[in-house]
Image (cartoon, rainbow, N blue to C red; front, side, top):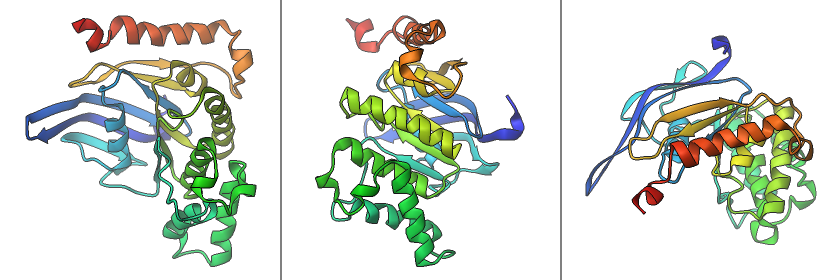
Length: 269
């Protein structure tokens, strides 16, 4: 890995939560470097700290110990250079699709760009996700998949150095999910974004990733294995279904999740 291209550098990170019932050791000994333009997925069983790690990279949480860097600067809090897309899209229901994106654009670029430039930036983001025709609609007037696309457009409109996604397609039906995965592949290729994405879906991880980071079970979860996905881009899901390497990568992730990391509930049973 070319260390000159690293955008995210996570060193010896620990995460403890202090609750009324005592301390909870969520993450231990997390070490990970993400290159510029790399697509990383975090996968593991529920409770393995995937979202906690993503929130640490976003700056929404501060580590109990260790250091996180983005572009050689310490991650000390949230920043527009690290945009987050959540599973529930987090759109403001009283604003249109255009207004939801414009709000973020104005916060980031309002001091340096005029109104016309801000409008152009907002419309370009809508066009990128194919929602130009829906710009005047409010969230309750569009589908779940369209809402997620607005959330992705809002994140990308701020030109982040890193795009962070927490199971963005988890609540969608299979067809919409597949469509948005394909759209995301095209968008990331066009924007050359650095992406870290939490997923529970093995096929999604193999389809999208350059590397799959597999987490051990919590508490005190850590990185168990990292799988490099050497499939050429652009990727096409129908062709990949016939690719022997795709099956090998898929099997390797399943092997880790269901043999090396048997689910705690199953172990108890």
